Amino acid sequence: MDRERESVRVVIVDDEELMRMALRLVIDGEPDLTVVAEASDGHAAIAVVDEQRPDVVLMDIRMPGRDGLSATRELLTRPSPPRVLMLTTFDTDDLLLGALRAGALGFVLKDTQPSHILEAVRTVANGHPVLSPAATARVIAAATAPQSPHTRDSSREAARKRLSVLTARELETARAIADGLDNPEIAHRLRISVATVKAHTSKLFAKLALQNRVQIALLVRDADE
Image 1 (cartoon, one colour):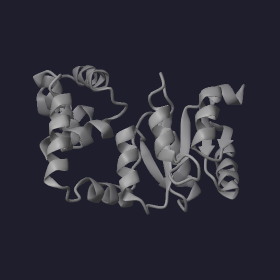
Image 2: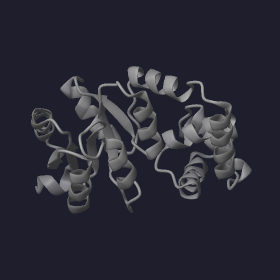
Image 3: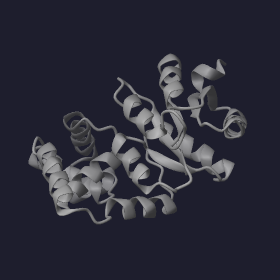
Image 4: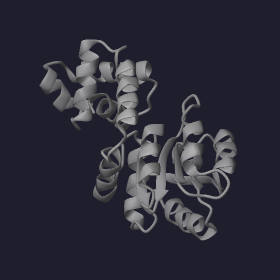
């Protein structure tokens, strides 16, 4: 078996060499995961990802040179971008929220147990978000922090304009996603099939130029604020 071809391909981006080494040891010890490259900052990450085409990028937020948020924004504009899982110490709520808006699928604390890191990588590789209770609380706090009236109005207007391209059913689906419902739950609420929910969700991604359900939820929140 060609392990690298059949495994989830992972790139590790962190400015600390010891952290990269530790993550590589943990990830490469699994038969279904393979670290294909490392990078020490956002600039190097862009080049490595373009070369290796990984499935998942473990991306540190704060790095000298180019930070992980900036690199994530650029990576997720690529055709068929990798899934990004942020490495964080939760000391920058604004960057956490910014990373979610950019399309990162979740966060892993640097001192997370190895088994939980592996679970997070697999979950993100399958296209599902990973937010620990601690991360969720911090993101909600950052998302609901008071803004100036001008900033709040501008954000609401911009979000509503983006959502205006949706049909009524697509908008209902977006609101259900923002409520945290999964596809069967949305199907039950809207009295449609799961297949139809999936079709609506695909249209949401295409029309709104978004990568995942977390971004949809944040956009709906901005529109309703």
